[in-house]
Amino acid sequence: MSQTISEPVHRTARRIGGRIGAEFTGVDPLALPTEEIIVALRRHKALVFRDAGLDDDGQLAFAARFGKLTRAHPTVPSVDGRPDILPVKGEEGIRSNTWHTDVSFVRTPPKLSTLRALVVPAYGGETLIANAATAYRDLPRPLREFADGLWAVHTNDYDYAVPSVNAEKAAEYRRVFASRRYRTAHPVVRVHPETGERGLFIGGFAQKLIGLSGTESRDILRIFQSYVTRPENIVRVRWRPGDLVLFDNRITQHYAPDDYGDQPRVLHRVTVAGNAPAGVTGDRSYIIEGDSAAHYTPALAA
Image 1 (cartoon, helix red, strand yellow):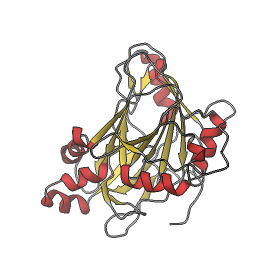
Image 2: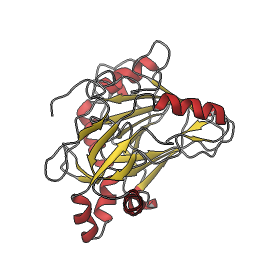
Image 3: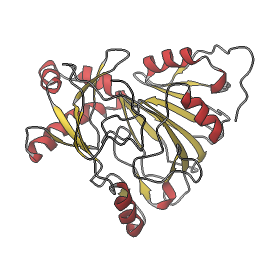
Image 4: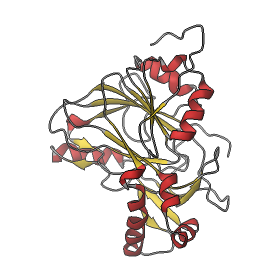
């Protein structure tokens, strides 16, 4: 775990994307003032801390500066002895090469996510992060007004992790992933509770629009999602061992390209508990099937 220095370090984040992303280099994340990080995150949505030098304890301490931590995942096992850390291991052949917002299938998804690189492949294995706020602003006005009134059902009961190597492991992973079934209604347009920005709150877990057929839902969600994944709305993080990434899970999506063959890739994820999303009318998300996932995330005030 990194040691916090006695004097606060003030370091400007260097912008690495036109619409999303900034990075800090040569600084211990635990030494940066929390408010400075929050201001940078509100502006850039995703922050990269190069050569952060943190171990598991350091990552946990860093994430805990921003609120209560969730457990590793509602259904997937944690790192041994570390109930708040999710191992992300690409070499097992289960790769999350689907655009998504972390754990959006529960009523209170994480507000922030951290990823720390332990082992990275010689090529590929990067992480793409998209700005859902600029995607919303890119929509033509009629589409924005249409989106404002829509609600989507998010669920973990679908083929989220795409099998790339081992079909048997993929089937087992899916069984574990969907061992508790969740279906939650979220607003398609989420209002950020701190900045007031509107963002498209969809991604791979959003499988159907309330009041519309499956075919209609897929077509409409595909249109909205195409704005999220426009190249100008994306930053591409090229990992080095020891790097740490912090992103705002309330107003971003991310994607891990399956482009590194059978090379090992190991990240650790720690997430910060969040509130139930609110739409433009102020109405909040609600459970359709499943429970409140209290075993996974602490209850926070609305």
